[in-house]
Image (cartoon, rainbow, N blue to C red):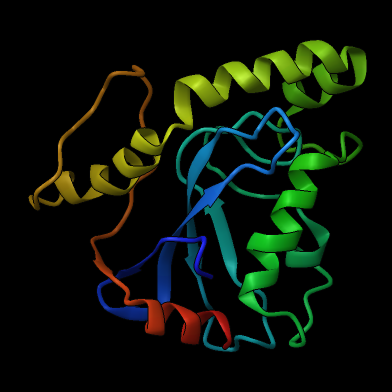
Length: 181
């Protein structure tokens, strides 16, 4: 997980945020997102809950809540999978190959099916507007600021961000251990 920044929530190994970069050679390539991860008590036998904290335009990701529609996470999860699989395989594949037949974002699905070039252009616009490193960091800090901790309230985009819990830094050793759970 050396390519991922991981931040614990309240020093808990069961809730954290991962900074995720869009896959190369896709319209998501220059994007950076904060992904909220919650591990249920039954993990690894039950799948983790994941969600994008800053906006993303994709047929299988709800633009407002950040919820992800991905069978391998939601329905066919196996204890053989590790968290690293989500960030190195499952999410990059989802971004590369949207499933417009099972959308959470109907507008993105329709545009993807009607005009793939216009879809790619809109994704790139969203990346520039909502998915810079600063946007990912602002998504993390927004809830901290609302809770009275340090953090700036950035309304630059004019859109409300999802609420987040306070978090702590995870060391590289802790992050590697968490990802091997």
